[in-house]
Length: 127
Image 1 (cartoon, rainbow, N blue to C red):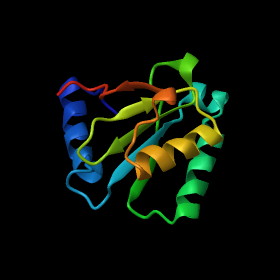
Image 2 (image 1 turned 120 degrees about the horizontal axis):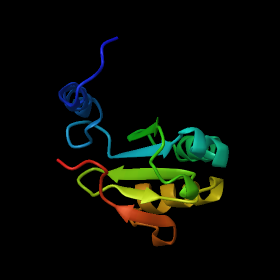
Image 3 (image 1 turned 30 degrees about the vertical axis):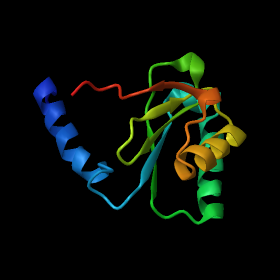
Image 4 (image 1 turned 180 degrees about the horizontal axis):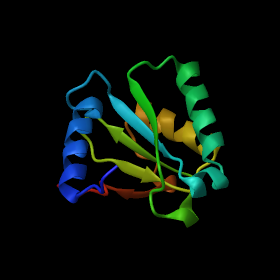
């Protein structure tokens, strides 16, 4: 495979935006659990399992649950990002199963940021 150029990555990014763009889809939220090797070592799999169980328990159908690689803050793993339709993404850090359940109930369902576990608002991308 030839080396990718920045322009190639931008094209891929634009194409993928249409797939998961909350503004255009039927989903009201997206929760991304960061599962790079550092996240997995810190417990991201347990966070993901707890998240899936609360989604099933609550019967929520309009939330995308996904994963990504490392978010760049290994010392704050496990981490997750919550994106509500029309709102700025919020990155949560130092998570465990109970914290992600609280975040799901209060932020994803209740639309209220859980400041105790939030690190920052906004996206890593500048566009």
